[in-house]
Image (cartoon, rainbow, N blue to C red; front, side, top):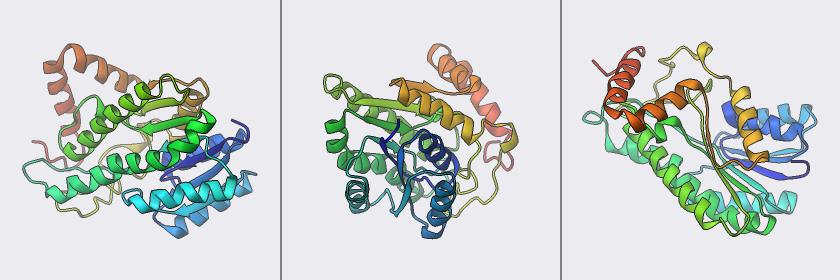
Length: 268
């Protein structure tokens, strides 16, 4: 990965920042994006202190024009784009019959359309350099999670898009990888949207028992190096995907019970 130019959306915290550190420490040049300029500045300064060639770019992935400018900035700053990691994401927690549909639309705009926009504008350079497109999806893109209608739908859609792109790029030497972490320590649950679109605030799960963002980043880094197609992380995640394929009725019951144990779960 030395001297590869890597764009990471949503790179100021969590998995995105861990990925920036992992690729950067292997000699990659990094452009991270985010909506908060001060958070970006802090993250970029921390990366630079580690000797990483990093820049930040304020962008909202749900806006097509921001993604176009992001790709232009990477080319202006580094002269090329080798790898795009579509990491920016948001989640929600509410029963479908109670949630405002605008909440689901917002999740889809970020998690799905944001990936389409970023990939569309970075792909010409990635094609030229025979690089990689990575989508940070989720086990929720293989197995629907109750009270996560918007999130699971966005990740199912993302998985479908990446599968299409992977097949279209088969003869063009572009690597496309769908990375599906299980529950991983990050801020995504604290920023989760509730049924009316307000921010949840506290994580309903025990973050200490989850895979760390750094371990997740290591697996994704190795997946890019080895040009893997699908990466499903954690034993719980692999088990959920396997069980859902072969015993969907049992999977429904087990998943319901697990999600119902969350703090303040909307499930009864």
